[in-house]
Length: 178
Image (cartoon, rainbow, N blue to C red):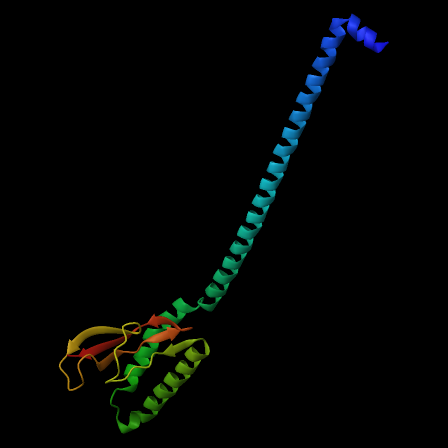
């Protein structure tokens, strides 16, 4: 009987095909929406993974910076103490009379205690010797002088250099043989 209705009423037939087209259109839109949502989800997951990786990299860099800051926190203070040790070492080189030898012994004891304290906190003197090789990474050549020493070698040490935790605090000031 329904076949008879469809044959008899053309409006019902048009409405049925229109409904089929609407259903197909709705299915296409639903599939497209699902596809768009899947793409957005994949992109959101990728963004999350990248954000987590960036966070971990920042965290590692900050930890490294913190360790570096802690290990070099006293660098400025150590640099400020170098003129004091220089003055004590110059005082120890002064000629003294017999009555002043006790004073000289006190200065030398102070120098050795000072050096021990500096080493305890990571400050070490750069080893340089007359006739030794000039190393521009740890030596600062002030000038060249005539000397019996081989050309290009250290002819005179003007000022001691120091390292702080294996980083140059002050280079050794030297004169180089011509």
